[in-house]
Amino acid sequence: MITIGSRGSQLALWQARWIQGRLEEAGETCRIQVIRTTGDKITDVPLAKAGTKGLFTKEIEEALLAGEVDLAVHSMKDLPTELPEGLAIAAVPERQDPRDALLGMKFKALPAGCKVGTSSLRRAAQLRALRPDLEVEPLRGNLDTRIRKMEEGRYSAIVLAAAGLKRMGWEDRIADILSTDYMCPAVGQGALALETRAGGAAASLCRTLDHAETRTAVAAERAVLAALGGGCQVPIGAYATLEGRSLHLTAVVCTPDGDRLIRRNASGDASRAEVLGRELGQTLLDAGADDILEAVYGGS
Image (cartoon, rainbow, N blue to C red; front, side):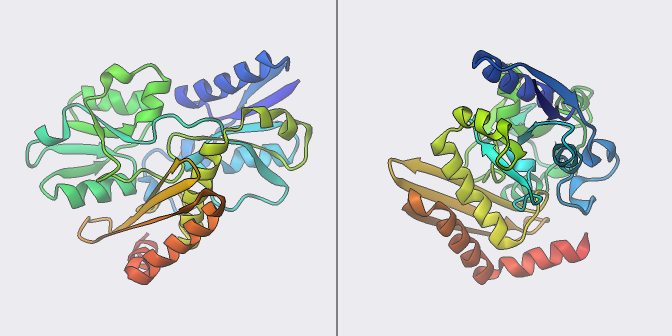
């Protein structure tokens, strides 16, 4: 019996059940244990001001280390770049759509002064850089809660990850998909992380679910984040794609008000994914990202 640890949101449970299904197809018996995380408990404060890494993973990782669960299913973008000693990412399944999606109306149709909601400092910063005329405001809650708030008229539009909407079968609610050319995704967005105790039986079982191309792309993105010293709730985006053995990586760091955005690119052999990520992170720091991040951390 494999016990899978998961948050209790609709999307988190969908992801955990999807992994459960893949493992049971391979002949394993699984159960899901719901664990409430710090991020689930903090609902009245913007995530960027919560002031801690691992908001949506810490309690699940503690359960892993204590042997209460054997496998954790995370959204990769929630997982800090530094894992607790004794834990490892056993598999990274094939990525869903990494882009951000707009609900409510198309991006070009948003009227000046309209209210756009997002839970992400990264999204808010890039929206303000693209459209300083918009009123970008914090939006918390699970996927269905955020959509309900928009439908109640509190926001003209909201920005969510396309992957979550597609996984939930809510693709028809998407008004617009935001191109990665101007809205750089979060590190690991659209990908899942299967975290286990290092060297344990669950780690071996999960390896069949690993998707090499996704793991390589995500490794490059996470290396950017690690080089920048960033957590999951800072105005940093990174997105990698592979063409054969060539990896192409874009990353951005932006001030929360959108006044200053630094974007840089790198390409190289996919076997050097993490090196490319670290080098691109350093390039961003040299270009002034250190000042931006210092201001964000100092003001949080």
